[in-house]
Image (cartoon, rainbow over all chains, first blue to last red; front, side, top):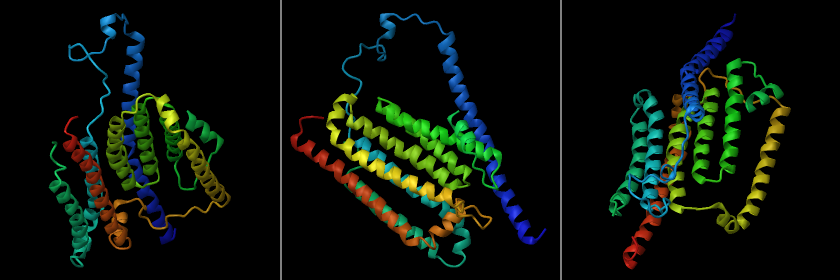
Length: 138
Length: 196
């Protein structure tokens, strides 16, 4: 066996090991899906169904429901969702940066500056949202 | 089940792949296709959104099979998490109501969609035919998988530094855009100051 072959097999087994680490997650996913499905099917099959008029009516904390449940939501929710997504993506970029930070910062502070510029631009946006009153509800 | 049928119909085995990897590819691919169809065919937009979450999770599983662990995590965090929250909020904001009234409003959009969809299909078909003809898919030569977070970090902060910084500008533009949209609304409301 040449060294190249050895490198290849070790690389192969490394990726396979990493894939094998995901098998518990696969089992968990299947178990969760089966648990939900079996419970729904069993209660559908075994549960007695005696429906009456009051049982079938809309439940609204014991009050008499009035109007449609589908109100138009406030546009503020859209703002909250967008701000959430934008800073979520920022955090996603932080993760690979954190992994290589120690290795690269030894050569100089350039990698720190890169990330500071990235975060700085987004902080500008954050201040803009704040000043415009986007973070207060009314 | 659908995936299993596909698997028996087209047994594509790359040399290094394990049996489990292949089986999972077709199971997850089947989940993606079925839930994507559900997105289209469910009448209630909220159900469509939930089917889309399933599809996105299954795509994350496909990324794991391709050893792109970071991309899989991003798929779950950003798409199945954040983007879906936005979708649900937008569905509730628009308050679409029943589909019938939507259909005559969108009759022209349907025609445009047919053209764009067939163009996209032709494109995908062409690429697939080309790739199947020459089974020389780009191979990963180094031991490190391409989707490894460390590899992505190294590329992102050296070779693709400018796109990375531009990404922050795009995010900033999105932030300012949403404020502009939302703020104009609240200004109008304060001018009229009748409906809340």
